[in-house]
Length: 137
Image 1: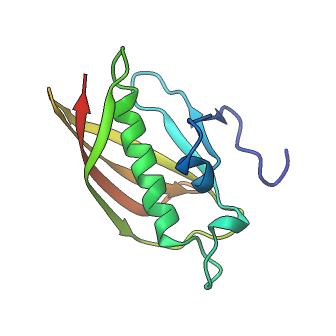
Image 2: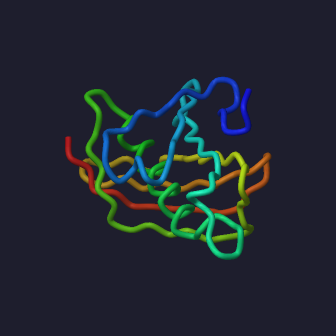
């Protein structure tokens, strides 16, 4: 395993080309009956002038993790659009850190989904997050 490789069980998310290519690479790990884990290795392009991951990187990661849980909640897949996103920063992430977005879908309604969760590093939360998404079926 190289320093940038994801932990066992994670596979490349292979999201569509565009903005997410710049913030990642992102990884997915399936879990039984609950939303997938989203993973991100903090790389040099994520680091700011304080040698920590830029807050925008963590905010984007939160949005990716929360919205992916909604996207993947039903078949055919849903099309979520962020209405609100809240991120509470608890600790910094540093170069080489492996982060996991652990998400819950709190309510999945007809046109709106409510989500929450944590960004974890080595089993400890470094941020809490919540989001509300408009969904198109």
